[in-house]
Image 1 (cartoon, rainbow, N blue to C red):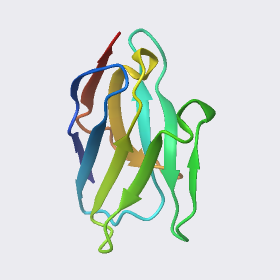
Image 2 (spheres, rainbow, N blue to C red):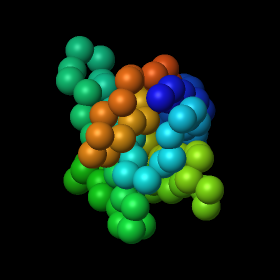
Image 3 (cartoon, rainbow, N blue to C red):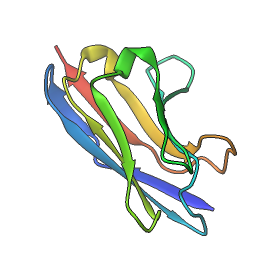
Image 4 (cartoon, one colour):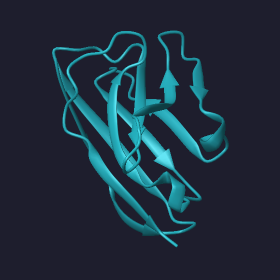
Length: 111
């Protein structure tokens, strides 16, 4: 399994970004977006499950939306009202099963 996140960048506080994740040899059933702030541990911030349910860490609720395409080959994270504390490297991976960590994408929110 190979996973690659893209779509990061530098935005000002209050801005928006949409991240995308593509994978090989995987169907995006139970999937998540993870964030690793500078000098901190990686954390799961958003999940989507096989039944369509989603879950978010409290700090991003109401601002981030996780989706996938109908074919379950692409995963997305719409991030609105970005704050400096959202800065970090974002990765996609399984929400229940962890696969090899692929290339993340850097998100930097300036104050």
